[in-house]
Length: 207
Image (tube, rainbow, N blue to C red; front, side, top):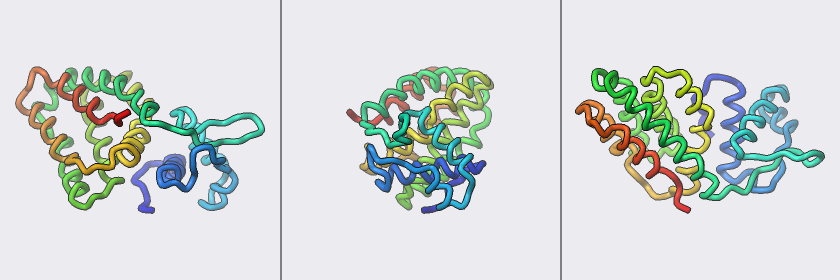
């Protein structure tokens, strides 16, 4: 597995577990043993426990007394639930950030360029990473700490990874879709909020 681009040991472990779930190493209903992961990654059990708690808070795994932690049997409907919430937040973010991003789209352009390379290479992990980074730049540009914190709490990386890799197997041009959003910001499109909301909803897995 290609090492994920992350910022902490907990995030690395979270991505390792997520990759195992996505790839089928751990099947729905199967137990994930904290101690085994710690031994495998040569780390203490504390960051493993923290990563598992985060994944549980996102409803990706579940724990029960005397039964340990197990993978939830997720459906497309489960994944789809977060998208209307995310779409509403990003609509607000786009409207707040419109003036700032109309003047400077450099950060967004960098992610589009990276997405273009990921599309050509068929690199699903990079597509997820740069898609999330693109949208984070928009939310960050809104300049609202509450909005950013709420958006981050949705676990965007996790749900985007599962949506793309489990329920959206067909190839799509992520770069082109995001370039259209950049163009709309540059042109000061008065409907930029609605445009971004529609885009996010279109990414939701089909039930």
